[in-house]
Length: 133
Image (cartoon, rainbow, N blue to C red; front, side):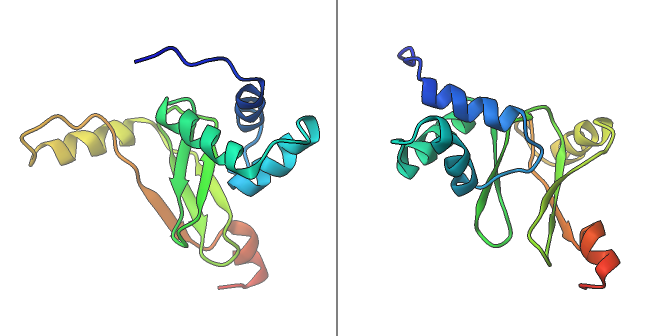
């Protein structure tokens, strides 16, 4: 694989993802990065977000409505999406469950399961308190 050329724009996108817990859409990342790089295109942001995800430097989370969100935290963890407001939230769960799920799935599979993706859904705490269920 060829060495990837350094890009200040990509570095800015990665830095933004690393410092937010909001799981932004590409549009949100674009609005933020545009402050530092006013001539950047939305297409460039999309390409770089997908590249970061392909390289394992970000997570791409496909939500139930089909939209993609991005996460700078690449350690194994789960996400929750609110069916009312669309928020994507990290779930604070012991990582042992992640490994146990891989092992359980591997018992009925002849190959090697190294990872998995699970997206929980329901009503987030804020919407639940407001009675938006």
